[in-house]
Image 1 (cartoon, rainbow, N blue to C red):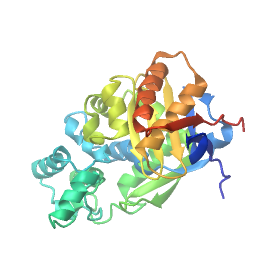
Image 2 (tube, rainbow, N blue to C red):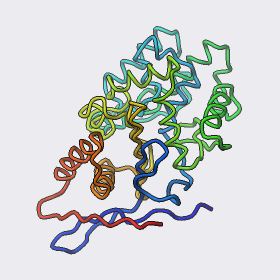
Image 3 (cartoon, one colour):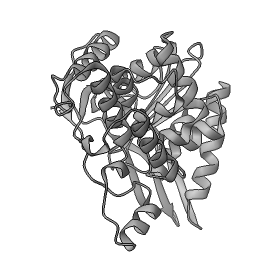
Image 4 (cartoon, one colour):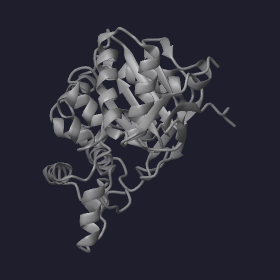
Amino acid sequence: MSTYVYRPMFRIARGKIPEIEIHGFTLIYQNKNLLFGNKKQAHSKIVSRSLLKPWQLLAAKVPIEKDYRWLIATASHSGELDHLRTVHALAKENNINLDSLLCPESYPLDKDLRAIQKSDGLPPAKTFHNCSGKHLGYLWSCQTNNYDSATYLNPDHPINGFLKKKIESITENNISFVTDGCGLQSVILNAVDMVRLYQSLVADEDPASKALVENWVEHPRLVSGRRRLDADIVDDLKGDWIAKEGADGLIMLQSPKSDRGFSILCKLSSGMSHKYWAMGIWSALKSLNSEEPELKRLQHYLGLKVQQFLEAHQEFQIIKPSAT
C-alpha cells in the first residue's frame, strides 16, 4: 500500500472561516532538480491515466510527422465538432470502420454539448468518447501492421508491448498495467517517473516525438477542447508549455524547450477540477516565488484565473507546504 502523501494545499474562506480545503500535491522540477514538493510525493505511486496518451500514440506509430490531425490520438477531447470531424475524416481516409472502436459509447465530455445531446434525445456514441482518437490510432496501427484489432485492449497486444518496453527504458523501472476507463491499458508508476517521461519526450530527436511536441504547441485545442485548463495554458502562453489533463485529479505541464527543463505535476485527492488545478499550481508557484520567466508568466496567468474563479467575498488562503 502506497504511503498517503496528500497534504492540504489551500483553503477558500469567507469571513475568515474556511469553507473548502483541497488536498493533493504539486511537484515542480527543473530537469532532475526538485524545486517544490517533497521526495515522498515524488516517489508515490500514481496511475498514469490520460497522461500516458503521448506514449500510446508513439507506441502505435501513427504518422504524426506527416499529418498533425493524428494529435487526436493523444487527445482527451471534449467531443466538439472539430474533434468529431477529425476522427471521422481520419477513419474514412484510412478505411477504418469506426464500429471497430473498442472504447465505450459515451456522451461528449463538454458539459454543454452533453446536455444538448441528451435533451435532443440523441444516443451516446463511441466517437463522442474522449479517448476515441487514441482507439482510432490503435486501429490504424493494427491495420497497418497486420495486428489483431479485436484484442488491442489486452496487455500482451504488440502495441502495448512496445509501450511497456518504451516506458521501462526511460524510467529504468518495471511498470505494471491496469485497465483504464476506456478499456485500454494504463500504467502504475512513481510520480517522478511521469515527470521523466515528459522530459524525455521534449528531448527526443525522433521525428515522431518532435512532430508531436511541435504540433501540440500549435494545435492544443485538438488535444483537449474549449474551456479546458491544459489547452488554455498551451494556447495563451504559446511556446512556454505543453499540458495534459488526466482523470481523477492529474495534470502535467512540461516546457517544450528541453534546455529549460521545467516540469509541473499536480495531483488532487478530490479528483478532476480545472478550478482547483489552477489554484493548486498557483499556490505552489507563489510559494516557490521563482524568477524564472516561464514560471513567473504561469504564476501571473493562473493568478488571474484564480481571481475569476473566486466568488464575491471569498478569500484564498495558501497553506504552507510541509518539508516531508
